[in-house]
Length: 117
Image (cartoon, rainbow, N blue to C red; front, side, top):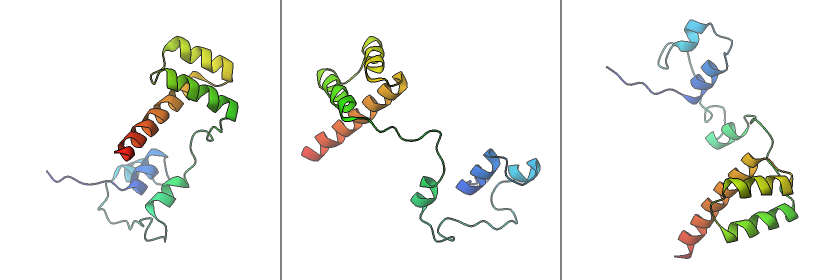
């Protein structure tokens, strides 16, 4: 059985219910239709993905929020449920924003530690 790769455009089209019929949307790449890649359109792959709208806008943390988040991170790199609730209430952020900030901060810490070697 032959393995086929699926283009980003085909996946996006089939998941967003493009203008095609349901049967045509399910047809794998390699069929008779011509597909343009981002490079064909004069775009880089990064540019085309970055142009897609995301679910919500990026959160811009205030300096006071960042100061409190950094202080908490210095005390403990992994946040517990009660500390997450406390920070969310104190900083007027959601618990998922706190969780994501800590995940991102741990990755930044890891990169900094690797760069220091």
